Image (cartoon, rainbow, N blue to C red; front, side, top):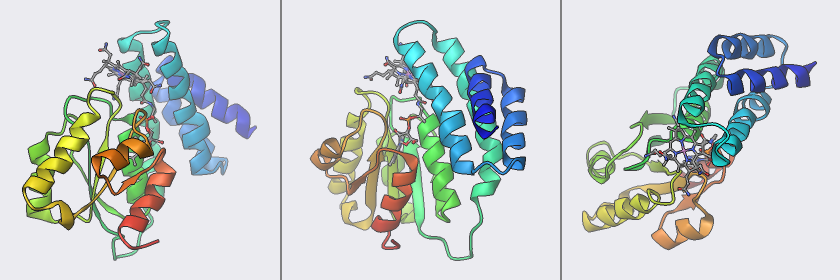
Length: 214
Ligand code: B12
């Protein structure tokens, strides 16, 4: 039964059926299916299939976008269930997809999971320039900067942000975590980031560790 429901969510995302995704996500919650399973085995699993189809040119950008919108609609249903926090935040995080990159599905999942783990999250969205990250450290003193990149071309902007922070004398004031499909631990080390995580769940653990709240 649970498997059928999760498969139905996958199909609805793949078909770009927003209303269907919302309805099925709500029903899955009512059935008591774990939120993490709805996310991983329903919504994210569908985007993996969509990604494979996009890669081999069997679907194109408009179809991917329609599926992405349907997935976001499902995430919006789940979001309130993540936020069961006390008064004291785990830490302040500024998150964004780096300059030149418009991909935000993974970044939004990380953002949502961090909020769910009681971090205060300031989400700068997509195509976030160096100055914006540096300005945030200067003016708002976040504990953690989280940068996402999905393109092999844009991931180098992460290094530019870190270098700009060094040049402004601000590097030691903030921890930096990076992620996104092309990013690896080796890459994170090579640009001088403090942490890397391959998925949203690991990102939360790493963020806690970097903020001294393991
Ligand atoms: C959806 C998608 C799009 C959508 C984006 C919609 C949106 N709102 O995000 C649209 C259609 C707009 C798009 C456009 C393009 N795309 Co695109 N896209 C994808 C696709 C199919 C899925 C990405 C995705 O959402 N995955 C699902 C999420 C859940 O996974 P995720 O992002 O990896 O995130 C997880 C982890 O990486 C991690 N994570 C993510 N961020 C962070 C941040 C931190 C701090 C941490 C710790 C962890 C973390 O946690 C997440 C959750 O577990 C991928 C293919 C793929 N399989 O990845 C191509 C892909 C990324 N795109 C690609 C390309 C080439 C493009 C375009 C250039 C296409 C074009 N010709 O115009 C444009 C680029 C536009 C731009 N300037 O950014 C290539 C990139 C190739 C490369 N090596 O650089 C890919 C890999 C497809 C391919 N050819 O194989 N794309």
